Image 1 (tube, rainbow, N blue to C red):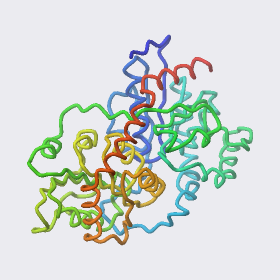
Image 2 (image 1 turned 90 degrees about the vertical axis):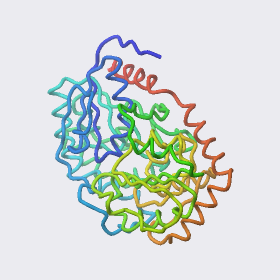
Image 3 (image 1 turned 60 degrees about the vertical axis):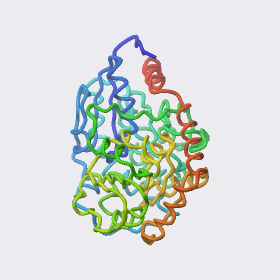
Image 4 (image 1 turned 30 degrees about the vertical axis):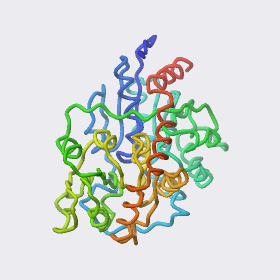
Length: 395
């Protein structure tokens, strides 16, 4: 399906934190560029400068919590209160800085529309101040909007700083359109106050095959196990990588571990004599290259990692480390596609037992495949870009 836009747009893509908040925007940005629109990307320097294909890159000096060598001690968190930290993490100085920087880009570049993440409050405010429509792309796959009540006061303060009228119903947070890269069973339309459009997971195109992906597909082991703790919580995961490896290494498996940025793969080398498994540890391998051939995925429950695993129809063991990861893990358990375990206390023996149970029980794979079929039925990225064009045309 090809888009044929009536006019070339200038679309700014903005994200508030690290790579996990950028990832949902990238398929839309790539498609917009492919059909002839000019695209600009603004956000954390280290994530922005990794990208290609944009008309303009605008790196911001945002210090990400993962930008220090790890892995350090595991950060404790309260599973019932973790979503109440939205103000602490995404408002205050973070939002005011984005307000200034994004407003400057929107006006200086004469942008037609802003596409931003659901926690990019400064960018949303900048768009309204500049008189430009905003399309919001959700970052959380399953967590509800219960956190919204906790930010009512700081949102009004942010709007006041931009010279905007109060927004008591927080309509700004829904934009002119909310794009949700998840199914309605994961995150229902009732979570949002405006028009909603779903987006089918869109794996990134791979320029050159990664040698570790070929290694993962090779060999005569009965199983393939993929382990990742993402790109933000990986540096504060304590000894979790090692415990997971010790747990699954007793399986007749080929095991691929990706440590993510700022974690040296050499620190995750498995001990000799762990078991019959073949193990390879890498900084990064595009997950689209390995998920389709995995039999089991072990991860931290980040939205991108969970949606990617279910889209591929692969069962998951989830070790939540914070943010929206507990709700994601609970969803996985509720649909029967995996098991949630304690990142702080799970022992290698317990991990091995659960991994063996999932690998030997076909129901987990069947449930993951059913969730994948639902994700694959969502609108394609071409339809989302067409909807963004329509938003811009109405403004």
